[in-house]
Length: 236
Length: 297
Image (cartoon, rainbow over all chains, first blue to last red):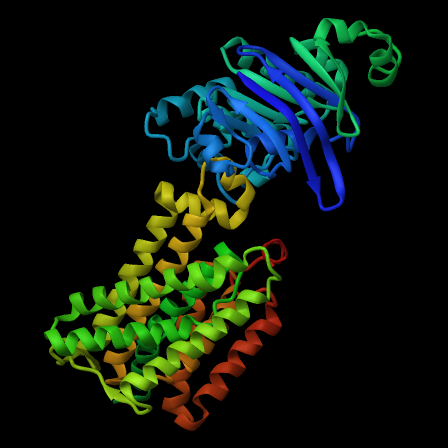
């Protein structure tokens, strides 16, 4: 579904992504694990069109995404749950959801909003409140619901568990599994390697801008080097 | 007329004048909120809108509504051109750069207007029948009433646009977080030019309304109105439409009461003193919260 070939991204003199190639298969959850600053978010941002790659190709089906502005990537069916959640704090929960379906003509908006409120009941109770008043976990639910409003073919998730309480983290990963079971392909970037590998089909390990390992999530969970570096030395 | 009714009359006059200031301030605040720039040519676009209205009203003897539409379209188009040529190319430059280029646009428009219409005041054609309306002991001209009604209708329309439509939500999303707006599917370049065009169209309407109110236009009128718009933007709370509205009305009423009770010579001095006092009491403006200002600047 998504194929990245030899992607390079530079920020001034910093060479953040150095020749990354990876693929995301239709219907699967693919995870990129790696330490802070490894370049995980930069890959996600390049796919979405928030960063212009120096070279390389990012293909989504027939479309080349590299260098396209983000709003065009969105129209091609790519949704993003950004790092730090990116909710529109001054707008109400309902308005955030409506923004999720911005510009789509083929929509049954009210029905979709209803669907999201059923999936995330907390959003129903707070639908008229400014989104900035929600707790961190609730904001993450809203960010996920907002991305789903566009019915994306591919959902990019950047550190969805970051900074959340353990109980909420489990909820988020349950949600990721459910979204995928309902047919959405997901590319997930996580520092919480244990949880991420548990829900994923395939995974890549990124170190200083390069892919150093790839395989099925099962293989990586059993790889001694991965266990040592990312799973705290304990088998998942 | 009793003292009390004199006061009410002056206040009403002030509200009418202030409503025109509000329209200018709302445009300033819209551009500031969405593009994070101070558009220093806003006053000159108002002037240009007034002259567009004057040209068409004189040559084609248009009525009020067509004159307002022509002024709005002409000024709106100028705004769109300015965004394309003097603002967008600088989107990655220092944030003070558009301040300079819009000052350039303001000088250009002023010089062009002086060249075409001469440096003196030009009488504005009366596109409405001027009659005096008595409301009990108060009297208003038909122009006063018309100015007030046009401003209220436009501000309500703007509020509805921003709060009830997809486009309005996209504008607010861009104002709050351009990156988030873009990955949700908002073409931020489009939002930028549309916003500047819309604010300029409102300024164009204000130009005609002020021309009608005072009966004249001048190529140099943009400076005081631009300045007043800028002050009401800051006093209202940067980026707040309600704030711009209230601050504009406050400025108009203060000016009018100063003229009525002190002297027209002190009009600007007293009005600006009041606004400075407001800022001393509420440094982030009437409707701006501290957090908002920090986020926005």
